[in-house]
Image 1 (cartoon, rainbow, N blue to C red):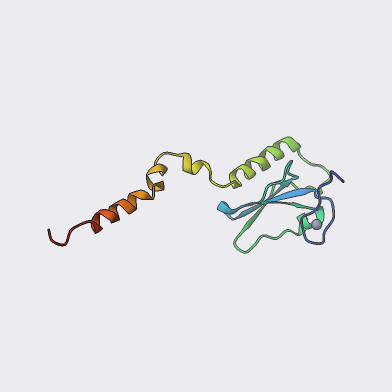
Image 2 (cartoon, rainbow, N blue to C red; image 1 turned 30 degrees about the vertical axis):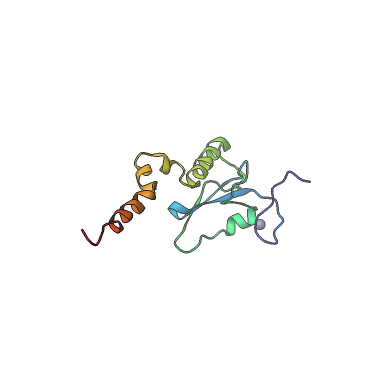
Length: 124
Ligand SMILES: [Zn+2]
């Protein structure tokens, strides 16, 4: 058992030095410091795979830090930024909590309207 995180690329067992986060809403792949914990849309990458990273067609790659560079800026700021990105990448839970969503979320409304039309008697 090793606490060292491994590169997520197939057949690559090198230690991970960076975490790639896909922000689907913005079609952006953010490469930042190693995440403190794993999330479904995050992929740990080793130094080599971080450098070779290419985004899918139509996507943009944002590099928060070159993890292999000898002099790194203060890790706290970068980590905060990376965490903010991961926060934004989460499923839109908050969108459903904002007002107005409850009306559209009630499927019975539509069914009831349809039912009323069907109830009209052909003799009246
Ligand atoms: Zn690798």
